Length: 439
Ligand code: CTP
Image: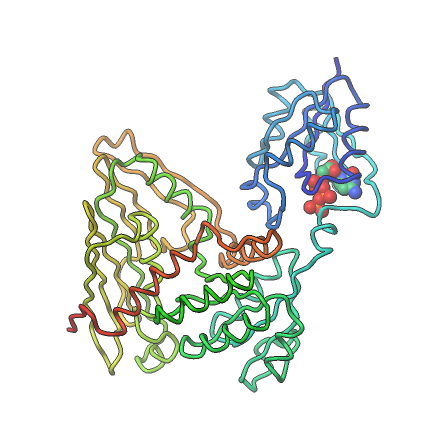
C-alpha cells in the first residue's frame, strides 16, 4: 500500500484545495492530510486565517479524499509524521517547489501543479478593510510596520497635525480628518488621551469602526457613551492593548484559571520604565505613570481575579506635578492584587500569580512574554511554557480587530467592553484623587 501525506491550512476551502487533494489521493492508496493548527499558522507568520481549525478539518473531510486527517502543530513535525505513519510520498503544490526537498531523505517528494488564479489569500483580500490612522503618537511607526504583516487590511492614509512629513513618508497624508474618515471602513485613533473622545465619537457617528490606543479613557460616562454609540450603530470598538491579544498571556490566563496553581490569592504585576534621561522629556513622552501604563497591570489583575473588587487604593510619588511611580492595591473577596507602574524609576517588570498550590512566574517583560513558569514547593513538578511572540505584538490586536469587523462581531473575548469599562473606572478614580496617597 502506498501512503501519501500532504499539508495545508485549507482556509476558505476552494477549488485549488480540492484539486490538490484529488491528485494527492491518486498518487497512492492512502491519503493523510495534515491541517495546520491556528497557533502553528501564527508561528509561521500566517495571521489572518479566517476559518477555525474544526471548519478547515471538516472541509477537507467533506471531499472524501482523506483517509486520515491530522493536525500540524510544530516545525519539524513533517519528518516525525513521515516516520511514524510510514509514509511513501510527501506532496504539496508547486508554490513550494524546492522548499521540501529535504524530506527526500525520508520519502519521495512530489510537487503538484498549483491551480492557477485562486488562493485563500486572494479570497481573504477580496474584501480588504480600508484603515485610516488619526494621530501620530510615538507608537504609530511601529503600528504601521506591524500592519504590514496583517492581510485583509489596506492602509488608506493618515491624518495628523504634525507638519513633519518624514515620519511616515510612504503613507498618504490627508489634510482633513473628515476626508480620511470618509475614505475608510475603520480608523485607528492614535491621539493623546485628552483628544480621543471627540475624535472617536466623530468616527463612530460617521459609521466607521474604531481601534484606539490604551488606555481607553479616564472618564466612565464618556467611555460608556462611546461603547453604546458603537453598539447602536453595529460598529466594532476596540482598545489596542497588545498584551490582551498575545498568545502567551492568554495561555497563562487559561492555565491559571484551570486551577493548576490552586486558588489564586495574589497577583503582582509591575511595569516600570525610564524612557528619557530628563524628567520633562519623560513626562512629555509618557504622561503620568498610572494613565500611561496602568492598563497593563489592570489587565492582568482583572483577567485573573475578575473585576468585582471590594477596595482599591493608590500610592503615588509626584515629581514636577506628575505621578512618576505608583502602586495600585486591590482587595477582592479571598484575594489581593497590586500593580506597580513607573515612568521615572526602574524595578523588575515581572508578573507573579500566587496560588494555594504553587505560583506562576512571568519574567520581565511580562507584557510581551513568550515564556512563563509554573513553580511548586516540590521543584520536580515545575513546568515551563513557551509561546511565540511575533514582532512588537501589535499585530495580534490588529488581526482581532479585522476579524471582528469581517465577522460582524461586536465584542471580543480578549479585551471585552466590560474589561474596558473596568479599566476606565479605575483610571477615573485615580484622576479624581479618590483613595490616593501621595509621597
Ligand atoms: N493549492 C493549490 N492550488 C491553489 C491553492 C493551493 O494546489 N490555487 C495547494 C497548495 O499548494 C497546498 C494546498 O493546496 O499544497 C494547501 O494550500 P494552502 O496554503 O492552504 O492554500 P492557499 O490558497 O495557497 O492559501 P494561502 O493563500 O493562505 O497561502
